[in-house]
Length: 114
Image 1 (spheres, rainbow, N blue to C red):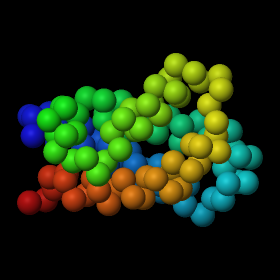
Image 2: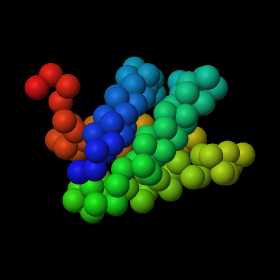
Image 3: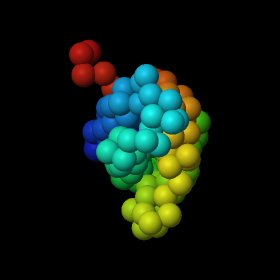
């Protein structure tokens, strides 16, 4: 693992946790009705993709269960095609994909308390 990979993995993990926490107790309808929440969660998904993009290729190869290309691709979609972001997909990522990603990241991210 490269020197800065733990920083980026930790940032991905923290941001994924923040996003899922913000989405807790909100269904798709509540998400779609709240523009601030939509933008905040899309931004957090973008941040996760940016951190993933900075994780070294060797670490990415060592952890193939993490969908690196999809995570980074979602970041590109939000950043470069922001006028046509599909918020149904953002909700799916936050409500379904991020909890799984959190579990995978917890398994590979060094703990601060040990």
